[in-house]
Image (cartoon, rainbow over all chains, first blue to last red; front, side, top):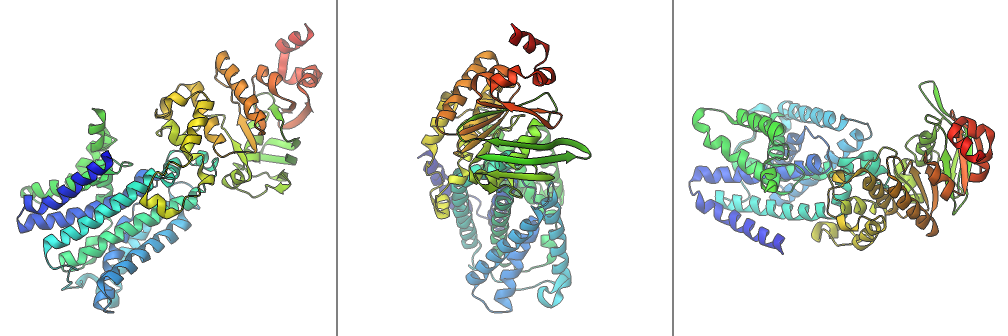
Length: 298
Length: 252
């Protein structure tokens, strides 16, 4: 029952946010924040719960954005149909990538995912006939016209994803994923085929990142490869770790903090990456459990 | 029930196990003993699928185990514990045991997504914790348990797979006499439930008191197989392994 109370509070906060900070600029930041929450949730399942390093989440974010936009603009698909195809496509790609990488021991999944992000970025830049390369795609319309409407849409989806994922990690599937994170040999001794479950988590994480990507181009209005530079994979990871990986609420807090903090410091110039780097370093050194660790200590 | 036929395994030129053949009959407590470095743990890792043998045959209830990965052997009914305890340290005791029910999960995936924790196997997991004396600590973190209780938790977790054959790698190592006594009783209980046990062990009390057959390995090679009484009386075994203390004891 307490869980439902927390959900009630969360829904109220999400609903109230655009009226608490009612300037157009900050409402735009709220949209970004909702997208970042989705990105952090997806990555957390892989890093936090399954213990696998994914350094290429930006690629799946990009696939969501580009696939949706191209299907809508070039092939005149319905937006939601295109979005669904983009998310499933990213999930399948993630599954294929992970299925190959997890056969190998050690950090090959991390390396493969990083390589995949580099390749994806290069494809976006160079496959001009489809992606328009660095010139970019312009005049992209969001699925709903108003900023507040877009915010409610993405935040609503983020709430649903949170709820589903929260169920998943409480279920036996969550036990299995955490078992793999803790000790793979031990998990195997209980009959867990860890390659399968790692690929599963990686694939779901990829799909959720693509789901965030679906809304990005309509919000910004343009689509250029630089938005999906591999450094974005790093910012997503910073959100997960700063908030507290392996907990459900931690990455959400991390995404909110690391979306708003750089904006508040905007007066000091382009500090975004420095804020991320500094926050990540401080957390890793002094608070390995992330921000949620503070709450747990009491 | 379980048989190994001329099994060998080398690691970079070191022949850890050489031409070992053994048969574990159903419903026995079968002990595998030998001095340090005799290849006992290697043998157990070969049987459980952590390693694949270089040569030889392995079979369980008539089915060949060759090429089967560790996780796949669990589904046939083979469970194990580790010499160096391998718990999910950050997880609670009950979560450790719940993870052990993995191969028995039959809840449809949509229920995991929409309901989450359905409570399936939770009662059974609690019973297993009770069985190993940890019922009161279900929500503690596994890594925070004292050593002896970590061993018992590992046993409870492995039992959650509902094994037909349960292999334990030095379960009494690091336990105090009271804990060894408790372990001994639990092993007999497990055996009475129809589970065949294969125990790699150093603790002679445990081996001599509960084992029905004993297999002695020495330098990776089979030395002797027989009842505990026969093993105790066998001069080569006494010399190779049991040493002066035990020789004196059996003489007395």
